[in-house]
Amino acid sequence: MDLQITSLTGASGSTHFVATDTVNWVILQADDGVTLIDGGYPGHADAVTESLRRVGSAPEEIRAALLTHAHVDHLGGLVKLRQKYAFDVYADPHEVAHARRDYLEQANAASLAPIAWQPRVLRWLSRILPLGALDKTGLPDATPFPDLAGLPGAPVPIAAPGHTRGHSAFLVADGEALVSGDALISAHPTTTPPGPQCLGPVFTHDPERNAASLENLAATDARLLFPGHGPQWAGRMRTAVDQALARG
Image 1 (cartoon, helix red, strand yellow):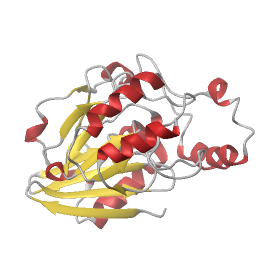
Image 2: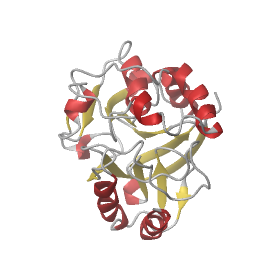
Image 3: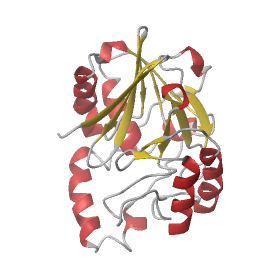
Image 4: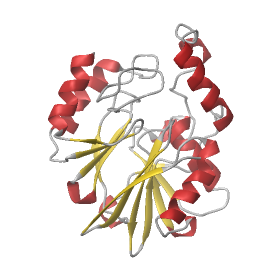
């Protein structure tokens, strides 16, 4: 699997943005271990391990994993990794029940049906189904965020509900980069053209609330966007949010 890794080094350690053609994750690496942010689809577990190896780490060094949200393409790889390795998984308090699969709040066959005929959607489905897109396994012991300042990389959570009811973003790399999950992305196989954008109502639980939450992201001083989908984007977050909102 092709992995594109962008790395930054600062006072809090090294930050690695790992991009694939379907979904992304982030590695925060410090002397006392690793924090993962998201983990791809179930079929990405080996790719997460490979990305750790490429930055000089290993899954045994994972101290914790954080979820931007509990959709299968962000949680699934973590479920697989925890079958071999012991680490805690944390989410916003409003997202914990979703991660535990007390309920499931993501696109399904019925919601995708109106767009499933589109060639780009069909191509996307052909890539994600082998990665475990239909897997509904959760993490029964997912827990709310502790004080994240004590984790490797010292990520700072930012509430960004809307895509799911407990979606979170994170400031990383000493505030230089924003991990936006799916609240704000830069590309997706089902959309065109690329650039800062929001996923549409097929994929987003509450689009109006998601749009309102973007103001929390725009208020940051980050100059790099690490989205859940698409390549990294450089610039002011205010500009990224304005461009996304202008696209509708």
